[in-house]
Image 1 (cartoon, each protein chain N blue to C red):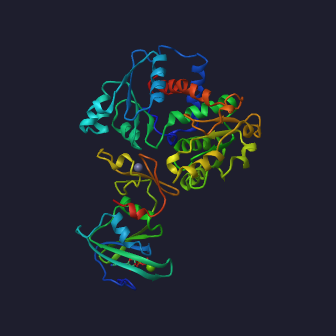
Image 2 (cartoon, rainbow over the protein chains, first blue to last red):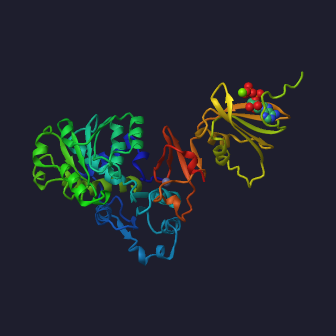
Image 3 (cartoon, rainbow over the protein chains, first blue to last red):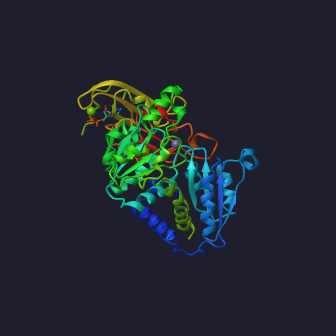
Length: 298
Length: 154
Ligand SMILES: Nc1ncnc2c1ncn2[C@@H]1O[C@H](COP(=O)(O)OP(=O)(O)O)[C@@H](O)[C@H]1O
Ligand SMILES: [Mg+2]
Ligand SMILES: [Zn+2]
């Protein structure tokens, strides 16, 4: 049975296959009844409007139906049922499970108890493979994925979106520029893992040092909670703000991505520049999730 | 043929069992923990620590009477004491001598240090770690244990 749990499980040809399929879907070359008569179960133990809606939309576009668990308070989870038991039971109701859960590793556990495919839609601070796939898809819309120089900017210590993206990019011989404030650097375990996968990471504290050398700049949020006081947060946040002037220093083909929602990391003046791809990135979410659903159920 | 008595023995010879030699100095007690041998289990165990040894400078030695360690048990030791040698003793003689190899994964041996990990809940998930080049990676949450592995033994 095919589950999609972590980018670490995916080989390059599998990712390429999913991205190719998403491309076909976006070009409207797909069977709109591919999943007719199928039921997708959405189990969101944590709120997430966008991810849930994009999976629902993806299922509907493939002719299938979605069922949602509803709120945690109203479910048997509130009575203390384990996730393992819930998954065993609902495996009989649906043809695939999309799971969002506050605990890291929940999706892996669910896949061990499910009798239908499980797609991880985010487990705590852990993996969120559909986000990584759509990041890769968006990059590939602008340039081939091989040998890119990709800048990851922001909270690289806790921001696991950047970790998953870097792991996936290592399959494409990327070079990574890790740009982070002091204390929020990419963890050494990830750097070591990337090295083991043949990917060199160079570290920077200021984006100006490296922006003219990048093909992709992936911007993420720096959360206020990580700082002892508002002043030190504002200090860091302002120096990590992407402005139109900064983007003009980059190579013309460099694209700017962001998993959204953004706060102040990207000046709205950047939105109008051809380099800004973050809204397109969000729009690709449905096609990429359609590719994932057809992969596990098609 | 005369039986050569074990030389330089600090502790009394055993008739049957296992001698774990060349343990990284200071790791003997952790080796016992990772093998699940505690004061409450039945084995007769002797331990020598910080013994001078040409090969590894100082080493620890553990002797376990009446128990021949299985391969998968022995391999757990590799994480703490990669240069350990395992000697199986029968009738006071070393009948088998082997090194330790890194296991591919550890089941039920270490607790995941990530408080958010699904294995640290009431879920029926047994701890499972994949051995990677720089440590152990949780099969569930991808957490990496890169140092002080012994501190996480269940
Ligand atoms: N009957 C025994 N009882 C306890 N320890 C033993 C016994 N026989 C050998 N040993 C110990 O097992 C280890 C391996 O023994 P041996 O193969 O003779 O030596 P070495 O590996 O040093 O060449 C040594 O630490 C030795 O002291
Ligand atoms: Mg010796
Ligand atoms: Zn874990």
